[in-house]
Length: 556
Ligand code: GLC
Image (cartoon, rainbow, N blue to C red; front, side, top):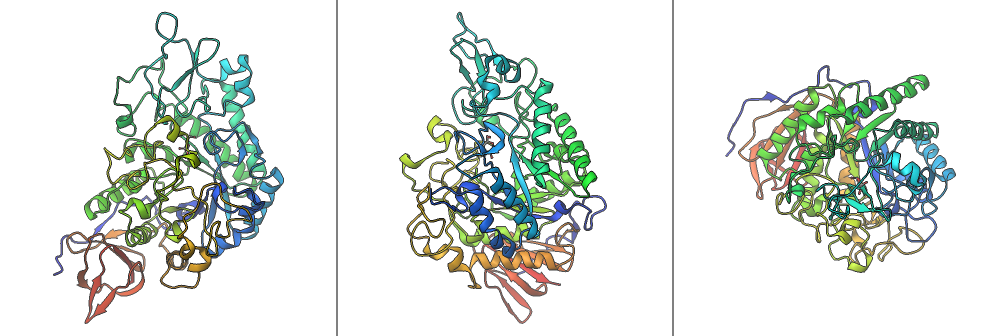
């Protein structure tokens, strides 16, 4: 029986909604995890040339832009998030010319390109850190505590496990919020600011359309580097402002970068953007990163962490929209990335839920990020042997997947980003993409693959799913095509509509979206004509049966 719960109520809107002037406001951006996307030279590691060759696939999928994870010169202590030279391409991934050709090829196809920038830390192989004089000024060195300085300067723990300090052979200590190979930069030093602005200009000159700012909440530490008190750090990340994350001082950096990006873009008649990977305790604090004079987007990890349940989903959607509306920014939705358990697995190992969650995400106002392989419904790989593991957190006994974010340890957030993985570490979502064929490496490249691919992925390849209307790949293609065709589906208004208990319904211009996160069918008066559904929906005598764990877009 259909129970009318509420009258239609508008969800919070950004002032002046409608198709805003910025391309990013409703863009669908596809994350290419370069080492796992496509390998052109047979070394088993994806590279820039491989990515360039497969760009037509992304064009055909229907995305607006690609975000490339770090391909810079790096010892690869943390998958390239330990950069030794920000202006060079690591030979593993190719050459600067390959980067240039990739950016040009993407633009020729009408795809924009976003690259990562890693400003919180460098590699310990960076020339600044290698030079003891420079290192002292540009990183965070402190004397130790204890009689002979044998104890770390404070009680901060590395996100990857263990103390956030390493002692040098000179006896002092340096701070690394991540691996010891990733020393934190000293952002009190103006030379650090100048260098990152120069790095941005370097890549902008090569034609990139924006930057994904790694650990955008981390650069500024509280004065005096105060202790946080023992034992509870892992639980506190994301729950409150810590002395090393989400300090108010980071916003001055983002303001300076916005001026740089706007100035650069204005002079060339283009819009170049910054997207914050920022973990903040609340949607309101996250919204500070996207104030009109700061970055353009911030990943909305609260949505990613939401349990698959109507009240929780509705309240996280409302909170996200209200927070970004208060600053006039679009909301940026994401379900999977290279740091969290793939959402098919995270949502209870249910492809049905994953497909429904994706259709929900793509129906919400704002921009959406897709992570390579989610369009194939790939599950997390949960049986990787220890000897192939590469995630530094695995070796340091750190927190589980999503260690880089809040509320993701399996204990405190059973529905959070870590749920359902092998043991919470991040290799299981980074297994190379299956393109074609029955056997590994499934067309990933002419050689093998740096992480083993499961033997049963033959049915999940891009080739196998292409043209099959029931496949997840075709669902993504159809959704992205509709998103382009229906005016206002991106950055337009949204209103909640009446729905049965446990079910969500909301309208967008020309469309009504129903989400049934319950494990069983629910009947309701057919709200319109089904346009697209994550599972077969039936309409009989004006009554629609929504399958359990489904999402349907209705033409109204
Ligand atoms: C970001 C990246 C993650 C990396 C960390 C340290 O959160 O997404 O992969 O380990 O920063 O750079």
